[in-house]
Image 1 (cartoon, rainbow, N blue to C red):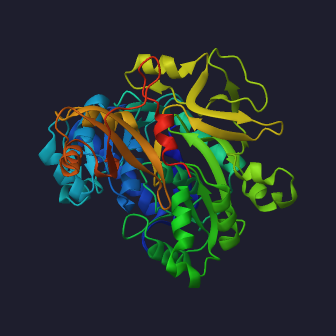
Image 2: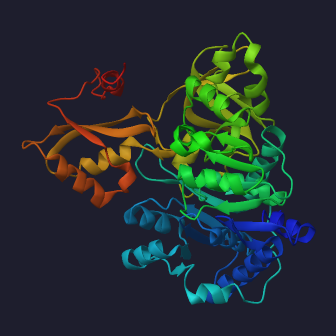
Image 3: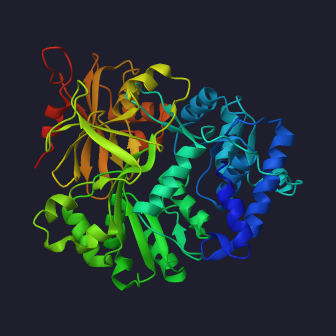
Length: 504
């Protein structure tokens, strides 16, 4: 049940079909894609002495070679550890150490950083001659894998401040793909997905259904999301699909170039990873048409918890609960059960707020080498998501709050505890609390409330301290110096009171 079989089968039936594109240029057909993956998998095993089940970190900015590396890892029976390319070297090091990765494959600039900043695993740059040589190794047959063998180790930060590795099996990924076909969309050869969002995260997962059906993985030359470039790619490629954070939808339709752009080649925009306000989705539907689908999921249940379907978004205009449905995350997916629960585990009544729990074959195996976190999250077969929500009489679920105080900025998860722990290591900081503040373009931005420990630290000093110890995108965008923080009777900081300061 090796997930790499998706590529092997498609290469058999659609060998000459374009598979990988860089901008507007096709760089590999499916035959070439599959052959290179099989050869690279063999080369990795031989040169680095890798064994079935070994972890290989993919620390890469968006690039067509990401797909060859990913499927090479799977083809050889190895476990992929895709890593957010925006992280700090200390965070890369933690993930390499925790996962026990035997190798890191990286894009050139990150390869240099990894080579200089850690010695836990050898680093293979996709620009090295050695990498090119490995793609010409004698290929090996695809390694057979059991359904529950580990395929993808997805590191997602938690409230403890340390990333946790969600263990996703070959069964988990296949189930997520089948659920996509059941609830999101179907595809034909020649459809494409444009990876304006990171391939190591949601956008990459949404590329898998297109590989199963002979679609094209399009990587922008910029490697990311530039509205003008994205619109140019839409004009060139047919039947374009995307996975967007809501903020990306907002930025696309707000771009000056959008006013004169032809967007008829857009087939589907799946949005998720953060809240989409009702006014924003109405504006997007007016601007682009009925080409949107919303999903709610998390790394522990990839792509798959609820869906607000393209049909619902397109045809629900006359329903009396239209506004509430647009503000919801839709209904539970075909392959899962969703239950809203109270703290004691009992199911909530309709419209009662509780924690969203889910079970099904898409739910992770557990957290890598973290039994305590696994037991706290997986209970009696149910995944406790940490998200609060309520279900109405028609089965539509609305998110009410995030119990883990997650901040989502530009579709990227940021956890306040990580930032607070860094700031508290500064000698001039006695207390700190980090929250998210609404931002028109990015959804939320990070701000910090700091209580000095004697001398008041300068903003420049705090910023430099953060940049030394964390990824740039996590650092606070603004600091507020306070004499004290609001607390309850138990001494817990009341973030709700801090957030009120920014409510309109």
